[in-house]
Amino acid sequence: MKKEDLRLQKDHLWGIEINKFSNNMKLYLTAFFLQVVICFGQNNEVLNNGIVSIKDNTVVSVYGDFINSVNGRFQNDGDVSFKQNFRNNGVVSFNDKQNGYTRFTGSEIQNIEGTVESQFKNVQFLNTNRSNASFNLSGNVSIDGMALFEKGILNNRDFGGAITFGLDAVNSLASDLSFVDGDVYKMGKSDFTFPIGTNKSYRRYIISGLDDVNILNVIYYNLNSDALYPHSAKEDVVELIANNEYWVIDKDKNDKADIFISLSWSEDMSQSEIISDPKKIGIVKWNPESKKWIVINSVSDLQSKVVTAVTKNDAKGIFTLAKIKREDTAGAGSDLKTYNAVSPNNDGVNDYFKIENIENYPNNTVEIYNRWGARVFKTNNYDSTGNVFDGFMAGKGIKVGTGKLPAGTYFYTIEYGTGADKKLNTKSGYLYLSE
Image 1 (cartoon, rainbow, N blue to C red):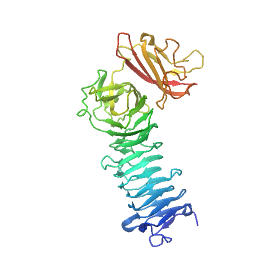
Image 2 (cartoon, helix red, strand yellow):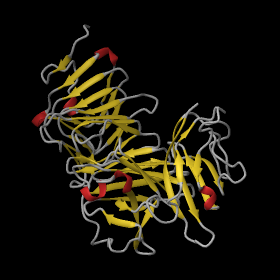
Image 3 (tube, rainbow, N blue to C red):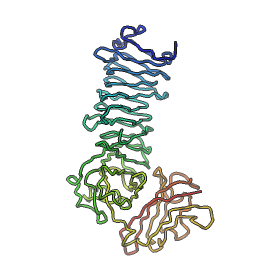
Image 4 (tube, helix red, strand yellow):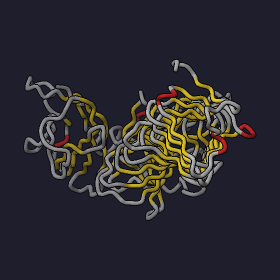
């Protein structure tokens, strides 16, 4: 057989009528077919009432609405493209030892629906419809491997479906052209970027450093939170709270470890007064006990347009962006100066992380984290007994090992106060470790 498309027409099915499977009929599409294009069915539908197994190295394209009935069993370990609507009322699954791809590649709005969760290994979302809102997600889908967001927004906010990423699942390519407009679930404790947003704006939420298996649920709102969580109730260092956006994070467990979270900002969506001075952009969280917004020690990255913070208690709650009074401009700690380049090569220059005037605040704690949110250094009363960060892991509670750290970017936090000052102030930022 030649290496060319084998188009299965309704009147010439090589002995198989796919839209009329009996309960005990099985179809195994293997690499023998090379590429199969299914483009038939009653009322332009492809109905599976039996068992369909797409084997490894097999490419299948489905033209027409695909319906997997209550009795249907559909296993994809090959490469299947759905060009129109997808409905699952039976079993849609994969072999975990294979690397199957399910692709939604239509040119008109596609409905992804059904009464039973569809389980996919890898998924591609690529819809060329002129409207960015290309996928109406009213069914539940789970992804165990990679999700590629190339073109088309998945709307489950208005349609009620759910998208869940498994323990080791990841996603890539999300942008203003393709993301989830609604909430996203993530299982596990691995670092993860939630591909969420709304109103044609991708507003990712990033989390790392979880110490236990969790089920997280994150959603972004392009709304003013003031009516629910009054902006007048805030810590004194908060100048202004965003009046047009917030993130809601729910978790099934609390974490004992410090957790990294990152929120993104956008010139098109974020409040201009908040992002006008990147040095003052910070993260605030609604505290349900004190019933006010509290500051989370954070630092902004102008290039990537994200604000990163370490939350000491938990990543669950209501978060948003705010304009923060920075302590390095006035008041306690204004004389603190950090030297962010560390090159521990014993040449006498930047051999350790230098914090000028830290001795004026002996009641201090310095912590350093790697880019995955793992703490690699912690000490009290910094630089009092040679206890400085010189590129080596050190400190109580360090779980990632011992020894010299690799070159790269790290995140630091400094808590400090005088003997009479019971309240600890905070300072944070990035440092750059070289060989």
